[in-house]
Image (cartoon, rainbow, N blue to C red; front, side, top):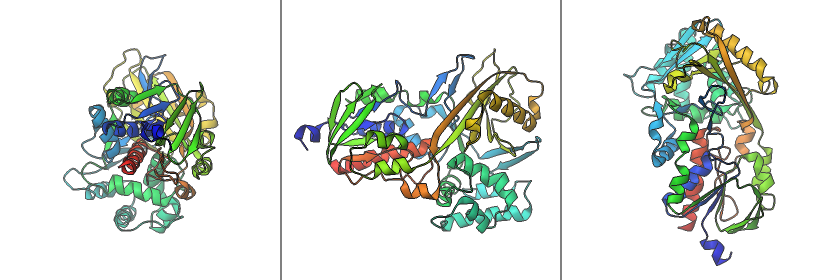
Length: 447
């Protein structure tokens, strides 16, 4: 390693949530990081844009946060945007069947966590007393033991006495929403970790948190924060190849510009690793190539009435659409030409991602009208369907064995991204946590 490379600023490849968290953490410590992003904007999948047909600012996909998102909130506090996310004062989730019937999980505020969540589960009316007691027993079991290493969620839940109806009405929607993987192939250990952190934590860990504005605004100050501390942010910078060995890395950009550094954080999606890291003799290229991906379909539906009488958020049971978000109630924004705005998600959308967008929108409108008779005669004005075929990694037991840690076998080379070994699924929190982990490893190595 040359002296110039050993003293050069660290470079982060990838300006998504993971890369931003890493760069902000290093800038905070005065290391003047260089953040490279191939797109003309930062944020990756944490992005919003103006919808041309309606003028609304919408996200590239609906993201739901929770009170336990500590790394995310740490980053937002640093950037000064923490106030743009509101944590609900209590946990309340409305479940709507396809015929419009309602069940509600409501955690009492008078009880400490996790007793509040367990009590909320006991209040579910569409499960028998025996099924509700089994829910509580599972909660207690999660607190003291872990699933077996290769166990799937479905096998784990059945082994612990969860009925088919309890899985269909509660566990399956949670698994698919958090892991973006069907319960039959999803990792039980990852599921258990999520449940412990979210529902068996402390304080408001289990409470839902809603961004009050477009996602891009949450990370908008990142570039200024980094550059004011001597760092650089280069957007539109496509990395062609990374070459080098321990502590001496050269990054070749598409315009043939070369950057050299002794410390490199790679924070790109797993599937991009083999392309840019092919010359680096470490196992991460193989790991990135082996991780399968899972799709998400997000929908936006605009109506000619405000729909203020619909809940802010609800889970749908027995439908293709899994979750509904009443955007006008969440953000408080108005649009007189398009008063009502509902966003929906279909996770693990392997079939839907191959369907025609118009057909998906028609199906979603039909299912929403069945689940929410309150929509009544409201007329559908406009729709938008967003397909992310590689939204996340498929959270299977095989994937858990492949996910690499932040520190690699090659000194000076670190990994970040929601696909790395965070013990979390592919979420905003997992991405932010991975960025901080990579930065912490780098800082520890340079003393």
